[in-house]
Amino acid sequence: MSEKILVIGANGQIGSELVIALRKQHGGQQVIASDINKPVDAIKDSGPFEFANVLDKEALQCLFQKHQPTQVYLLAAILSAIGEQKPKLAWDLNMNGLINVLDLAVEFKTSKVFWPSSIAVFGPHSPRQNTPQYCIMDPNTVYGFSKLAGERWCEYYHTKYGLDVRSIRYPGLISWKAAPGGGTTDYAIHIFYEALKNGTYQSFLSAGTKLPMMYMEDAIRATLQLMEAPAERISIRSSYNLGGISFTPEALANEIKQHIPEFTISYADHDPRQAIADSWPQSVDDSQAEQDWDWKLEYDLPRMTADMLKNLKNTLNL
Ligand code: VAH
Image (tube, rainbow, N blue to C red; front, side, top):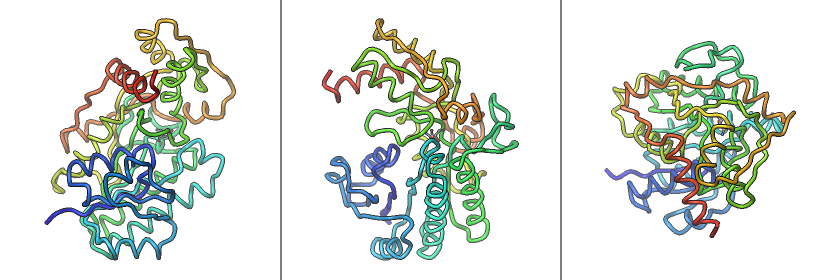
């Protein structure tokens, strides 16, 4: 039977690329993109779109009734930096949005659900190097503990209702097709635009702030690989660690200088996002993803940097 896939949060940094990838895999008409805002052209022109507010359960139920999705990807979320400015909204959207979707997926017997978690579920007392799949987790951002609680809900719906819900703890994601979503790792995207347009960038994270990051190409491939894996190979029903590439703003600036020798970087201090970054892992162990669904990273820092600059030069007509 052909899939009918509903992507909620299709305009976001992940959603906008995931919709295109899913439409390529399953056919444009098989993937319904939905968002609270009107669709970007690439989404509008390549398949069906529906307006959806993940907090309006009745309207969402009508969407499930109309499309009877076989798979649902819930990507609507408020990220770490904005979440600290709007804590109650972040909790409401990240938590109640997820519970609405889990409830409807059970009601409409949706075969598979995907929900993104984040390495933000770790906190100041989690091991910071090669952070394991299981360890102390004391996140101190609303985004982080909403994702941690969300992981618990996902595992609960799998255990109690047999729902095949799968999740990845994404590192900071770097992409050029859609704007970043107000996170702490957004510096690693802004730096490319500033390097190309102005030849200089002031980082809001300090030079030595090492964080796990990942190029969006790898993140999308990991998502599809997880969702295609046989259910019997999925041993983690909270969320899989995914490590990516760990680097600092200084290391990224040095890599950009290989392409733009005159590029300079400076560092702001006292930015509130520094404390968030300092509470997160510097590297993450994703051996469980390798073991369960053959995960393998393809973009290292040099390859990601070259690809970002090449694509941004084109889109910015530089
Ligand atoms: C954020 N980009 O910065 C997200 C991500 C690990 C970071 O979850 O909030």
